[in-house]
Length: 191
Image (cartoon, rainbow, N blue to C red; front, side, top):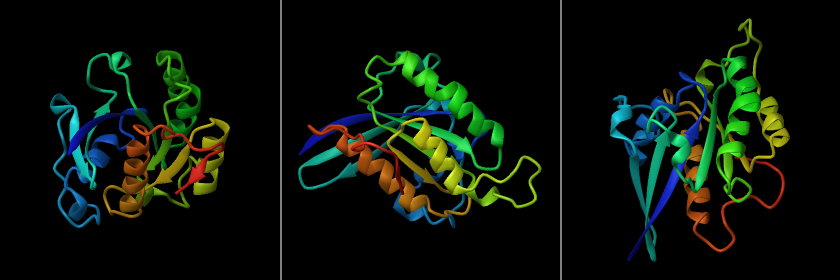
C-alpha cells in the first residue's frame, strides 16, 4: 500500500479556534462527537499528523498552523484551510482582507491549491452579540466572494458538525493527489 503525504495549512487570526479544532480531531473518529476531553496540542509538535486509509493508499495528512513553523510561507501546501471565529466579526473581515491575500501572494500555485473556509466556534454564535451575528449564509457569501472551493463550519468544543467538516476536509485533501485535483468545479460548495 502506497503512502501519500498531503500538507494542509491552517490560516487565520490568533484565537479563532484552530488549535482546539486540531486538538479535537487528533482524538480520532471517536473524539469528533464532542464528548471526550480536549487536550490542547502544542505548536512545537507540528506538523500534526493524521492517517487515512483506503484499499489502495495510506494518506498521511500533515496539518500546520500559522503559528508554527516560524515561516509558514515556505511550506508548499496541498490544501489550505482559512479559519475564522463565528463569534468575532473582525476575524471574518480579516479572512477577506488579510488571509486570502496572504495565501494568493505567498504561494505561486495558489490557482491550483484548493481552499476551504472553516467557520469555528459555532457554539458561540449568539443573538445578543454586539458584533452582530454571523449566520452560515453570510459566511458562505463571503467565501463565494473570495472564490474559495468550500465552506464548512463546526464547533470543536461541542462536536456540532465537526464530523461533517472533517470528512469534507479529508475528501478534499485526498482529491488533491488525483489528476483532477481538489478544487471545486467553479463556485463555493457548502457542506
